Length: 120
Image (cartoon, rainbow, N blue to C red; front, side, top):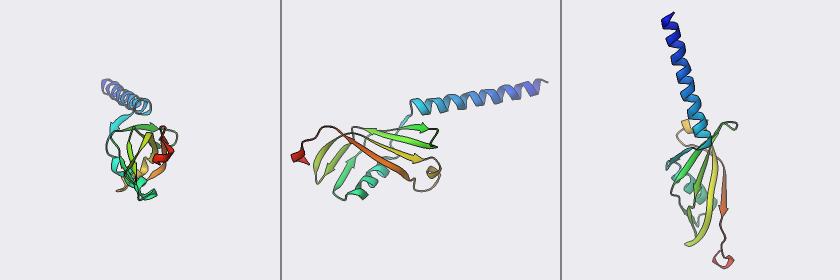
């Protein structure tokens, strides 16, 4: 009887830790730099004159879409060596694609701050 109750307690403890981790990852997320090059490359594929300097990326779990939402705040982007004020860059990466050698980005959303048209 004692071994069975210890096993159940251990299983409930692991389940609780996993649930707390999923809630934390879904609401707060974690900071990483793993996707910096992937996002910069994806942006450069869209326009060869575009260069990006992405600092910190925050990852949150999108449980319903089975993906990670990645977000970079205040990246530096240059088009033809002209700085563009960017508010943030968002994207979703499939969880399953993380196990491949090259993770795939589902979408890429770039939100800008106010920029002067003559600079663009």
